[in-house]
Each structure stands twice: as structure tokens, then as C-alpha cells.
Length: 388
Image (cartoon, rainbow, N blue to C red):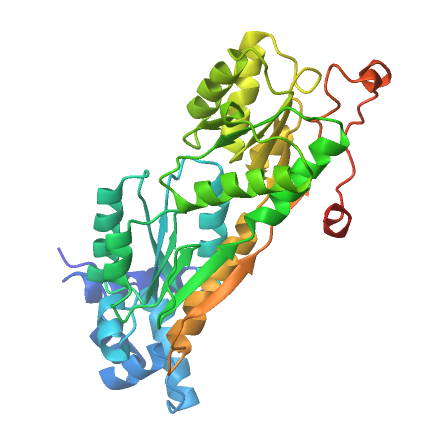
């Protein structure tokens, strides 16, 4: 049965009911489309299209009528149709390793916030450290005709990397980006923060320092381990192979690593971990083994996730700003999309790291100062210059 509109003299709040009934009649065949907007605004569909795509030559009064009609009808432009006209989808792809890792949600949130501000959407997927899923994720992005992809996974198969570099699609990588057009590479300065951490432990008279790496198939994990070994050698401390354990960047890997270290005849008095999740796993296993942190074992993480500050004790860690990483990645894609001529060797950005002191580190238990130790609630953060 047809719905009858109320008389126009019943204005006020009923005006919106009349408008709704009119919109219902226009949209009953399906979703409101560009023709409905053109009819309501009394303009051509071409004018609606140019207005929606923000073409500067559209008459201001006509544009005002179009936007008023869009608001009244609740019209949402078809992004696929707009992409065909403009050649851009206004969608960026974002690939992360593991969304359940506390390191990545802040990256996703920052990336999405920046996208909304620039009238972009994001297509998000995670690889769960699976090369096959990575390949499918990249293929999905390409098939969706995104304007660019940020691959923030700290690992990439060489074959897939070689395949991607020849596509005329803006791409952002961490550490592994080749020097090629349309490629942006964010190089993380792992050495700076790790050097600070090792020097901090050495200043507290730790000499037996262990390291729990990430999976060594990842270049980033190898880079962190190498930075640790180099920092130890710089200050004359021994690098003991049995004190270096391969982890998996997960809580369970940290627990297993401390189990191995605790079975050694000579055990480390401090452990530096390749990420915060590993460090939290180490702290949990220390609790299970009755090892007090930091009184009997000092622990340092890497990442400075929000969870680190809420551990008991709060975790000393090396900060790699997730907000800065996401901002660098998004701005790199946006700049590349707007660039008429790509840089022949791509672009590179540097992400600094630095030590954040909390309460999970102190003097080793055999140090004379431990008897008079008074651990502050929160230690002051060292300046980068003072740690070089």
C-alpha cells in the first residue's frame, strides 16, 4: 500500500517525517543513487559527479544544492565508480604480522586516524608470520586496486619482495625495502636503543647478560641480535653463545627461553629481549620459578608497548614508537601517490630507538650495593646523548 505524505502546513518536527516518506518513495527500488540526487538538486548527474569528486569548476550555488540533496537523501557515493573516474580508489592497504600482539593495534589505530583525516580508507590484514598468508594478502590488496600498501611485518620472503618491486604500486616496507621506484623503506635504528640498554646494565655492574632473540628467519631479529653482540663487544663484555636463545616474539617463547637459561650451570643476571612480549614471558616464567625481578634477574624488553608500563614491576624497555612508525608509513604512501615522477631509488626514512627506564632492572644480586639498594618507583629516562 502506498504511503501518503502529510500536508506541508504541518511543519516543524513533521517536516523530517515528510522528507523521510519522500526518500522512502524514491529509494524503494533500492539504494539511493546519483540520479536521485540529481533529481532532488535539479541538476545533471554530471554536475553531481563533479561535485562529489570536488572538481573546482562546479558553480558554488549548484554545489550547495547538490550537497543539500545528498544530506537529505542519505546518499553515499559509490567508491568503485569514483575510482574508475579518478583513477584512484582512496584506499590504502595495511599488512601487519599479528593483530593480537600489543605492538600492532596502536599502529593500526594511528594509520586509520590519518587515513580518515585524508579521506582515505584502509584495507587491513594480518599474516600471522605465514609466508603463504602474506602472498595472499598482497594479492588481495592488488586485486582491490588499492592506491598503495604499507607492509609493516618486519619480515618478507625474498621471492615475494622481488615480485612486488616491479609493480607500479607505492609500497612501504620496514628494513627490507629495495632501492626502486615507488618503494619507501623505514629503516629502524636498532643499534641505538640496544646500545643504551647494554650500557645501562653494565653501569649496574652486570657482566652475565643474556639475550632472547626473535625468530632468526626475520632480518629484524638478526639485526637486533647483532646489535646486542656488537654493543657487548664495544664495552668489553663477553658474548656467551649459551646466553643467546632464539625465541619467537611471543609470550610462550619468552617462557621457554628462561627455562633454558635457568638450567645452565652459570646463569645470566640480566636478560635483554627482542620484544616486549618475549620479556613479559620471561617475567612470567621467572615468577613460576621463584626468581624475583629485578632483585635476582633484571629484564629489558623492546618496543615499549602500552602493556609494558602496567607490568609488575613496570618493564624497562627500548622504545620503537608505534605512532611514529605508522605516521612515517602513511605519509610515505600519501606522498608517493601525489608524486608525478617517482624517485628512481625510492625513499628511505629512519626510525630511532631509545631506552625507557622503569623498574625491571637493578644491580645484580652478588653486588655489594644490593644490600643498600633503594629502587625508585620510576627511574629517570636517560638522554640519548648520555648513553652514546
